[in-house]
Image 1 (cartoon, one colour):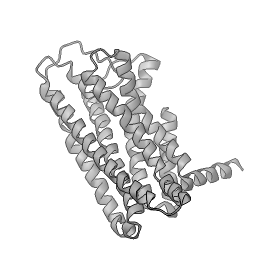
Image 2: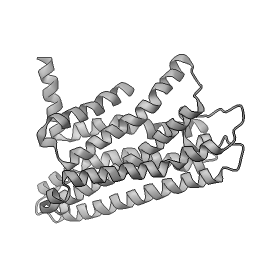
Image 3: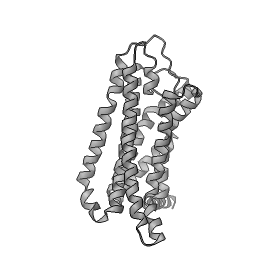
Image 4: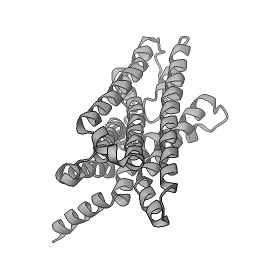
Amino acid sequence: MYVITILGNFTILFIVKTVPSLHEPMYYFLCMLAVTDLVPSTCILPKILSIFWFNSREIDFSACLIQMYFIHWFSTMESGIFVGMAYDRYMAICHPLRHSTTLTNNNVTKIGLAIVLRSTMLILPFPLLARQWPYSRTNLIPHIYCDHIAVVKLACADNRISSYYGLSEALSVIGMDVFLIVMSYIQILRAIFRLPTKDARLKTFGTCTSHVCVILAFYIPIVFSALTHRFGHNVPLHFIILIASVHVLVPPLLNPIIYGVRTRQIRDRFLLICTYKGS
């Protein structure tokens, strides 16, 4: 999984960089997504491999807090990128004549910086609050990585501030982002159904299928993970760990595969590179 994730996302970055026709907002957002996907994979998977290969089941507390920060930063960042992608599709389909003048390179850069700033500021209290709680001498996390709620539950103090902040951050970010994405696609579907022919409708909606697939692959596990962590008291622990792991590890693996298969320009360029190397 780690090798495929690294190769897949670096391939996306390489293809977009080397093909001038792909220097468009849609592919800039895709590059942001690829860079974001590399962060949790690099923060988590090497440690997971050391657990399985070398039975290295310990992590320094500061390293645990850093890992916690980047895991949740990844979730908030990726959610914001999906909103940016939805806005790009909305402008391209509903307002095609204004698309190039609205989503200029400068505006895409501003959107990217706003997504980074939002993620950084919202997630920063996670490690700061977790660091201030007292912990017992034996700290065992029933998890393969330092999830925020798993660490906070070990505190020997009233940790409701951390718990409530984590829940409110997840609900507000996911709720707002999902609402914006849904509203964008409602407008997109209305525009698609106004097209005169079935072929035109299918072709136009085909430009959105990759985005829809990666959104589902991201949000379904994260919602299940958040709900089972806080309310699934009768859910088996191994199932909670599995869902949380799927949320963090699977989207970075699937995103480049989905876009590589569903996006003709990327697929053709990748096949051209493979054919050239094969000859």
